[in-house]
Amino acid sequence: MKLLSDKTSPALGKDAYRLAVTPQGVHLASGGREGRMYGLVTLQQLQDQLAAQPEGIPCGVITDKPRYPWRGMMVDPARHFIPIKDLKKFVDLMAYYKFNKLHVHLTDNQGWRLPVPGYPRLKSVASKREESFGDGIPHEGMYTRQELKDLVAYCAARGIEVIPEIDVPGHNQALAAAYPEFFCFPKPDMKVRTVAGNSKELVCPQKPEVWKFYAAVFKELKDIFPSNTVHLGGDEAPTELWKKCPLCREARTKAGMKDEQEQMRAFFAKMTALLDKNGQTPQFWYEGNADIYHPGETVYAWRQDQARQAIEKTKKAGLNLIMASNEYCYLDFPQFPGQYNWGWMQTTTLQKCYELDPAFGKSTAEAGHIRGVHAPVWAEHLPDLNHLLYRVYP
Ligand SMILES: [Zn+2]
Image (cartoon, rainbow, N blue to C red; front, top):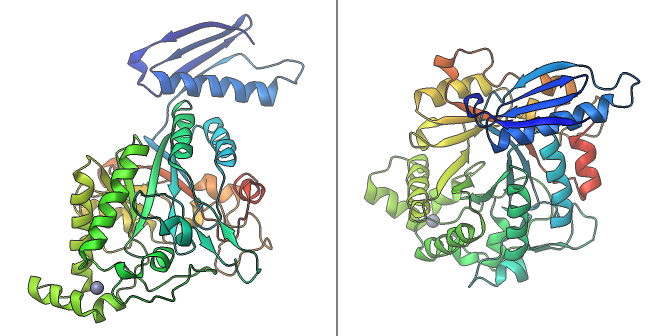
């Protein structure tokens, strides 16, 4: 199909386009770089699906733009390392489906994948585990700074921004194995976690070396990722060790904090201030307690059947929301009944995914703070690209 014209029309909006298919060929008008990419992708999709038919692509006009600015996917190389060449294949498919944010979950209990100058044990200890779920096979992986920069450039050429995630204060057993002194009760024999599930180890906010470490981490992120957005996780952080820790207890008493949740709020505020020194801003997994975040911040609704409540509570708290409610958006979940679910996953059919209205029918006044949608692909049980793509694309 011949492209007869390819015009910029800023009035459309930067990520909008208009595609007119005539018997003679195609006319494309787009509002900006993103809109042009999406217009060309739509044309490619039409050709892929319809060009084999005797009539070819039907004549008609498509005027299209995304409903939300944020259309993300998350990959989880912390659980199973994903080489950059495989991530690029994943990114090609994201571009084909017009996603524009790649969120890379770089750290978790089962592995740490970001090198940080001055902290060699991240590679020698935190990036390796003895086995996965008792399989007896060692697993390891660490990106280099150059590989990550290469990924960023590859994504940028396809209209995709890369968002790094460093999960704090929990999901940190791999870090605890490498640097036990960052934690409330250092355990020199701690190992990188080999199974799913959570760890009680939270970094101790009262230790100066913790803040020195994260300053180095954020500086490294700043050097690698042009995006100023840093996902800080903040999820599933049981505070029982903070409750017992003498340093944490003393700090709470001194600051007049009534409980560990107040300490969590202060911890997030201090992390945010540290990011702010580099011009970076945080995002968090939303944990249902809107008070621990600060107005203007962006959180992800992810917990099952809590989306409506999350929309209401985050609106009241002045937060921005990205919809990633797991019963619609977790693409590692099984696609049909009977497909293996590892005991905790709801069946998420293609139809179910498409049924998601991120605003759940709410008006702009009630849901205007929703920035978009996000599809995490957790990889506790996805050892390689084939498994990953099998789960994501039915
Ligand atoms: Zn502590």
